[in-house]
Length: 252
Image (cartoon, rainbow, N blue to C red):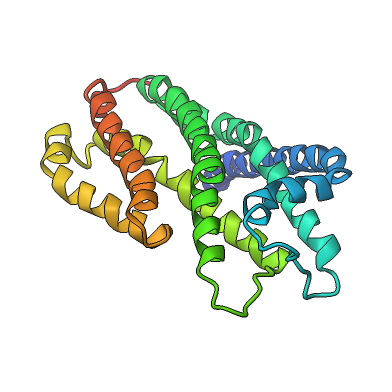
């Protein structure tokens, strides 16, 4: 290998090392943000769990309480809840770090559309969590506690309850990203607005299937999930008409 080849390889390797260093810096900043948010919140960990468990506790039979079946659960469960809460709160900052890392490699037209989509996706994710907590949880727990067999006292383990509600939070948060998904598919050229409109009947059926799987088997709670998903899909179609597919001749 000649000296010129070695110099060329060195020049190619330097940008990669610089990118890795910057990536490490972004990751460390994100972790630091989560830790800084977590530390003051941990002093109120038990209060956060009391608030989170309220939708279930109001429907427990008289004299029934939540229980901890593992030795460390009284400490680890509120700890885990507070950590997840800190991550949720830090999501805007984490996404900002991701954006700062990838933005230099985007075209100008991509930057113009990426920022609004990024902000909207965060807000929709939070909206999905709020919807699950205030609308879906009361329906689910009211149903589950009312169908317990005679002689069976409902006393839910605190760790299993936390795992259950966190799964629903993520499910509804992701479900509320439907408009963003539709807009991204149109923007990237994977589909068109006309194609989305043609597939509307299949999407509506899919919304009701998801509603059936994620909610108790009653028509009211199924509608409360399926109808918002349908509305969000329609909103995605409307806003997708304002987006032009990416063009190869876009300039950085």
